[in-house]
Amino acid sequence: MLTTLAIKNYALIEDIRVDLQKGLTIITGETGAGKSILLGALAMLLGKRADLSNIKDSSKKCIIEGHFSIVNYDLQSIFEENDLDYDAHTIIRREILPSGKSRAFVNDTPVALSQLQALAPFLIDIHSQHETLEVVSESFQMEVIDALAGNDELLSTYQSQFLDYKNVSEKLTGLKHQKEEAAKELDYNSFLYNELQQAGLDKIDQTELEEEYETLNNAESIKEAFVTVNQLLDQEQIGSISTAKEARVVLGKIKGFSTAFESLWERLNSVILELEDIGVEAANTSEKIEANPEELFRINEKLQTLYKLQQKHAVATVAELLVIEKNLEEKVNTTLGLDAEIEDLEKQISTLRSKALQTANSLHTKREKAIPVLKKKLEETLVPLGMPNAQFKFELVASETFKGNGTDSLQLLFTANKGLAFGPLRKVASGGEMSRIMLAIKAVLASYKKLPTIVFDEIDTGVSGEVANKMAVIMRNMGDKMQLISITHLPQIAAKGQQHIKIYKEDVQNITSTHLKVLNTDERILEIAQMLGGKKVTEAAMANAKELLN
Image: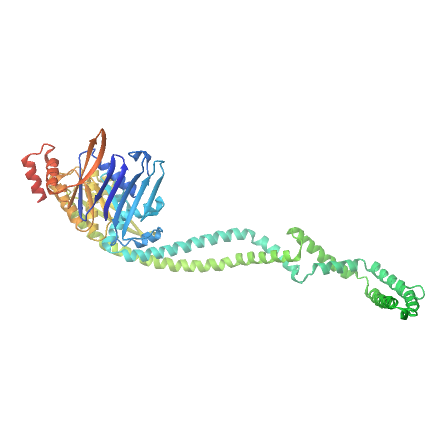
């Protein structure tokens, strides 16, 4: 419930603060006193977009603050869903700065307007005669039936099942789309993968293969070179080894004279040994080198395949080709594996659909049982409100299509008079009738559901006499179960309030301001007397006012 409302620098309001009570609070005031300003401030508190023109003094900021006691409202989950800190005593504040910038706070934490708008419907429900969209909406009508049917737990189960079904369905749709796109590339990716796999890249050493190709391609020249090297090193008399050996003999004769000479001899001896080894290896290699056209052709084919693959994939090494091969393998396997995943999801959807449908059927059954009860209560409530012949017809039809609240479609038909055909509520009910129907619905709901604070803005327009008195009784009874605020011009309704607030305007130094005042008993008698007979209060009006209050 709304416990405190404070407004600063808004329209004609300079600075007001009012503490509100439980039950039925009445707000009265002359036409133009500022009741619409109060509703505008409340609407902005609940998330309506700010307007710089609403600031009374453009050099100061406008502040609207509401304190709410929500300990019995079970709103913890709503706060969590909207990333808000829960507090049983919640404070909402809106500010409009002179610059025109607007800010919103919940429990002193800055929030986005969308967060405030998500929370607002659970705190205050503002209803006027001209705002009938709620009562004619199918979702609201279904909500009323569910409240009477006690469907809260069942509805929560269904919504959880429906969410699972929806999520898996969306995932399946995405996979099918992915499969369609992947199928277009599957043949090409498979071709590229097979081409790389057939090349046997994991067994190829490109450097070794290129060296082997060069060796076979130049076999005759290489063989001839090694034969020549062997001859130059090991040919008798003129070979390098022979002359080096003669030099070694000469140095051997003098090496004993100096360590330097001995060092030269040792170095020359090492050279001779190395040359002999090179000569032997050259001879052996020349014998091994043989022209092999078939092997040369095979290696050349392998290299050409490798070069083409590197050029096709714009890479320079076998390692890079192997990475591409692995990626292609994953793409191909993923595409081929989509069928199994799709089949698995289709099985899940079938199971989820069956469970959700079963719960939806249970909802439908309980709704069918609740409809006659709701119909009877509404029609009985409307009798004293001047609509003795009002009749409702609820057409509840189950389908195979899932919605947020089940599979039912609902049409509410209405007739206000005997002998007239039923028609859709939005088409056949007048504004005054719609207001009384809304009051009847809220009155019935109050017995089954914890409702937020309701603000009725002149819902009693067009009503008078005994009907007004009956309407007041209904509001008073509603106030026993919830907080109800009614802006009214009717003394019968004003007299039933547990709290009475008067809105009035005052001119001070040529400046008009709107004020609020909580009336005591004597002030209430005077206010109701003026509502009965005008500003000139008679003794009869005072007596009538006292009688109404008693």
